[in-house]
Image 1 (tube, rainbow, N blue to C red):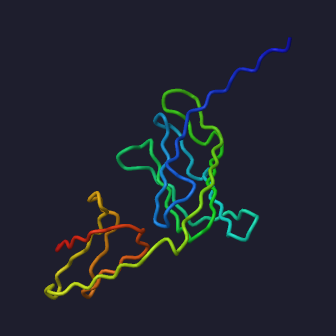
Image 2 (cartoon, rainbow, N blue to C red):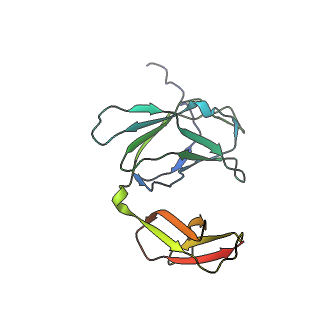
Length: 173
């Protein structure tokens, strides 16, 4: 009988990225172990408009390592409404710190929400002294900050607000 090929072991990449993301989302990717060698250039981002059938590679994105958790990467992009994206990573671009295993090819598609899924919240602030700096925090019903906006000339203009009940907190800096 023919000899069995040895199984090639790869270390795992986990994506925190659903099928549909918010326009302001920052998807995260986490390695199962620390990496010794990396290649940010091995990441590729593709975009496809709603009516298109062909993926177009785009370069207006950043993949940055997390400051506190070096196993985590953040994907920053200029997302457009209701657009399909595909993120890919070449195989062998990352090597585990503990042994010589590398990553396997990774690919995941996702889409951004439609503009109609969002609203705009404009808040007028009165009573601030001239030159006084302030910002507003928009909180969800669980008291989690979901948006932060500077007050400029007495106005905080919050774009791309998701649907739901929100609360606003003014912070005078």
